[in-house]
Length: 279
DNA sequence: GGTTCTCTGCCGC
DNA sequence: GCGGCAGAGAACC
Image 1 (tube, rainbow, N blue to C red):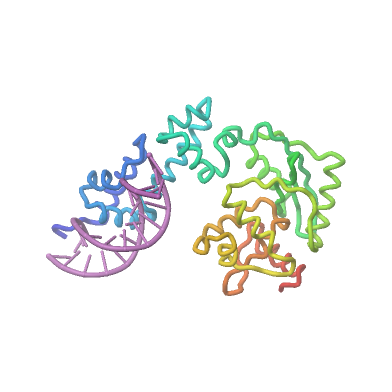
Image 2: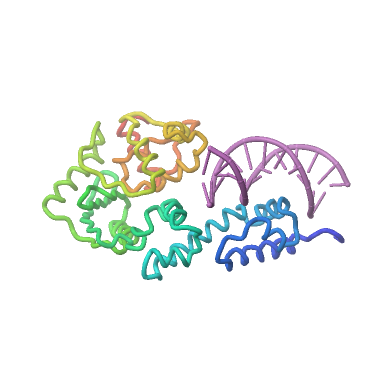
């Protein structure tokens, strides 16, 4: 088609823009990217989104996150990593890090270093269960059919932490947790060490206010934390919950009343809801 | 808290 | 297919 740009030409134009974003030390602005592609800013923006599925800004942000993670792992200090990643100021860096990494840059660099996590694997009515705790409280509760998989998952999540088997005190906690999972009655009184971003913590706190035997929708939770339009972010935060059952993300259902997915399997979610007399 | 930038919708060519 | 403008909202300083 003369005078028109073909689809493949579009794809290579956008691919070139992606490479430019990746190569640049500082995020190139929309105007620069558009000029480089020989298009107007507005049209370039539309085209970029059509081809990649994300906006140029979102693409640049995602790439910056990858770089931030790499630099934090390879650089000696957080300060040098910050300089290399290309943030304009340290405050911007520390501002962006929790969103991008789920923790402060220092904590990410340590990768759980310095943290000691006691853990145990047992069996409950929902299959194999892993419970882990720092000296502050329970930081992880996961479930699976395969106990080995639970341990591998724990090692992945806290790769620099010292993982040790539970002691006598921990055994007691473990028994209490299993009893709670099997009969999730009213309250749970062991301390929790909830690790996540500020946003995730707000969502999880909101989940904890859903009473036993009741459900809420993602929209309800979004409204509760004062972000009525952030339903997708809320759903993501529910999916990132590390402490199953105790933080009752299983009580969240779709607006139409149907049961949505569950990180530890829909069958487990249904079983939990049955235990609470909801279904 | 003001300024700049991003993003989207809409319209015209 | 492409450019441009307006307005809302987010990001930045």
